[in-house]
Amino acid sequence: MIIALTPNSCIDRVLHLDRKVTPNNLHRVNHSVEYAGGKGVNLARVVRALGGEVLLAGFLGGFNGLKFRHLMQQEGLEGVFLELPGETRECQILLDGSDHPTEINEKGLTVNHQDWQTLMEKLPEGKLAICGSLPPGDTLGHFQDLLQRLPAKPVVDTSGPALTSAISQGVLLCKPNEHELAGIVGSKLNSMEEAFEAASQLYQTHRTPILLTLGAQGAALVNEKVHHVRSPSIMVKNPIGAGDSLLGAYLWATDQGYAPEEALRWGVAAGAECARKGGPAFVTREGVTELYQQTRSLQPS
Ligand SMILES: O=P(O)(O)OC[C@@]1(O)O[C@H](CO)[C@@H](O)[C@@H]1O
View 1: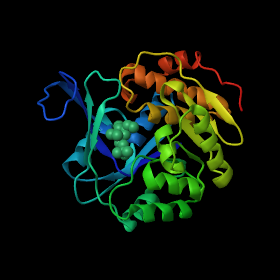
View 2 (view 1 turned 180 degrees about the vertical axis):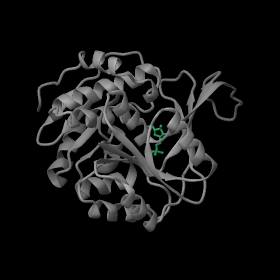
View 3 (view 1 turned 30 degrees about the horizontal axis):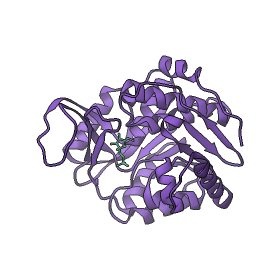
């Protein structure tokens, strides 16, 4: 079973706007939809759509915490959550017809060392994926401590110093995008080849395999070699959650016994399916299978 731990869970509010976002202006909402949100929840949606077993985990609080549980149950998702004082955050996703939506994410609940410990003690055995930003507070220290104490190495899809720290501590897999990779290595990456080179260097130094997402260029799994899978050509409706979908399908496929290069094809197909359908909630097994058949691994380098 995959355990999708989102330390900074949220309510995702998707707002379909009447016109392009411009600063200092009034925007009206044509319609809006709310979801139990966070990267791990998106990942879980895709694992489930593909027929896999997945459990959500995280911290919740206040009225939004109740709403999160309600929305999650409506979708048939299950989870282990620790209730904390305060309010679960909200993330606004503004869809205005642009290529990339505008996102406004709140900070989230404060989580202390004991909270992390209590939550981890509640979790069953499984392949742990830690997804999304860390909550505010001294959580980088808690997170580093957690990585050291876990019985098995987790998969990590986070950002900023937590991502850098996970790679250097050595985890099962990290999933940065090109922008995050540039932040880790501290220099601009001018081409895909430079990105592959930077990810390979990280692997050589820390032995953490890197699943590098490349948007419309697909994704690459970087370990001793670089396995690149291009994305099938699609019309993008909404790219938010495509990376989470990619990771979900990749983990599902490795659980099914697919070799990493094949699992990457499933991942890239699910990312594209999410982007063309308009979000992880619309991903279907049929859609992913159709796109999987349109992907192929490029010669490893
Ligand atoms: O603030 P974080 O934890 O980095 O990201 C949260 C988030 O922006 O990521 C998902 C898309 O990947 C959204 O569903 C969600 O709101």
